[in-house]
Image 1 (spheres, rainbow, N blue to C red):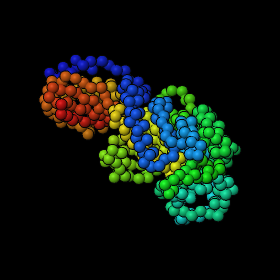
Image 2: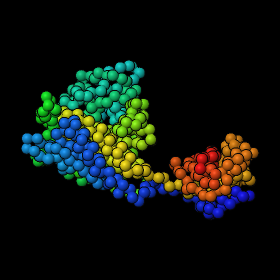
Image 3: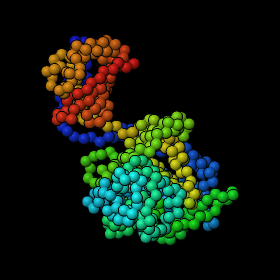
Image 4: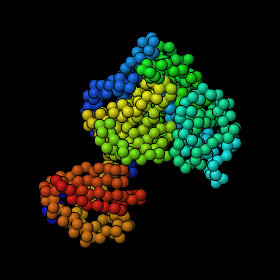
Length: 508
């Protein structure tokens, strides 16, 4: 009976079960200050990297909880006129454009105007002229195009030179028939042609050019009023010119006009404008009951961010400080997804064209993101961005959102504790699922718990539930000599019952 002292921790109160969802929250009240304290170090990282890699101009920004909280600028967007780079400078962001095209496709899907599993040839009949590699191959779908799984060969850097092509030039490629590297749906291979085709599908479905559709339905609602498709429309003092480092000097690169391939890489924007788009992606998480306020449903944006097509497992990956940290990577819908060895998820995209390099990444569960634009051919903007995020996380010590325990998890926790360690009348408690007493046996449960409580000694405290989701969690019973961890999983029934249970003795 001495173990019944545990009830001193107010665990006997009855919790009325209600099926409701509590979104994850940040619990650190000083989170913003801790993040801001890292900015000086991050600024120096960018300064050093830009100098070492001959970047003519750089603009970058840090977004926290949907707000652009810090910007930095180095060098010039126009070397001849010495125009300083700023958060208002308009850079061509290359393949970072792809997620806007993907978002437009999902918006059209949400409007009931297309389906992601429609054959793409429904909207581009010229695609029927292409002979797939095998007779039993499946048709190319819109989803295949979104995830680089259409069987097209990787087309960097060829695709980068097609930016200004007309719709007719795009369609002529299909009229002549394509060369395939794989059958559709059988592997990831990066295709600019695929996203140019999605741009044309937007036109066929909406009756507007992809530029107009995206501008009217995404850019304008977000207040991205300094974002452009055609470089000649950008105010001269804001336009970043592109350069290549050749023979120890910068050589200006010609800018291509807007065309059919702009859907894969033609957008021109500023750090201030792009941060609004990042905020939209960040606002999609966590799932919640709030009223929709964005131009695209939050659920569709989360769908965009999902790792649909696994592309790589990198066992040799390292953090930028050299610490080994294997990663798995995937392609989403116009977005890249990475999970590292610490289970941190990054969502964003790179961009590269003659004259430009760019990259953005958000950590959805941490509420932070970073973006940088460079006016140098294929500049590796991703490395200093990763370095900045690694540094921010390490120095600030911020943690991801915490999922509050659901009412039913707390209720089952309370009921479980009443049974420990003796498991008296457990079968009559009606809190266990049908399978439980076929998989667990009262005498063994009692023996295991009695031994654990003896090792722990007097119970002195009880932790809150650590919820893995709405129906799975664990908690710690703190003892004088050791702690006891209790983990359990509930069924999909209503009310949910305990189907799985584990007890583990931990060191104090």
